[in-house]
Length: 109
Image (tube, rainbow, N blue to C red; front, side, top):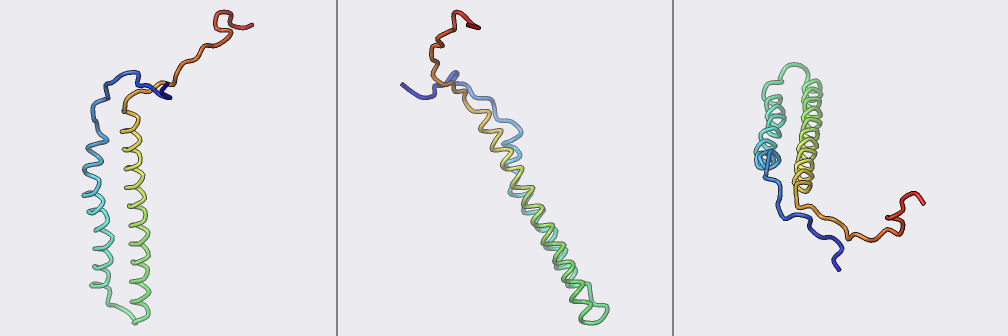
């Protein structure tokens, strides 16, 4: 006796989740490159002030870039998990084995 049996053999057609999963690597690379480019740009353009001030400004930009990267990666992971959940939910339908209820012919007694 099998624990679960398939109710029907058809699956739902692939939808938006596959399109998103296919584009997710490229989009995450592009989104991750933006804060990195900002950090490089800050190192090239910040040159006014005392050496301590320049280091402080670059450090502030680096902190912002790291926070942005972590936020982007968290969003990408969340979207990927959502797509995987939708894919699993669109899978075949399963049902547990039925069993006879003792009072099914006289409910409420």
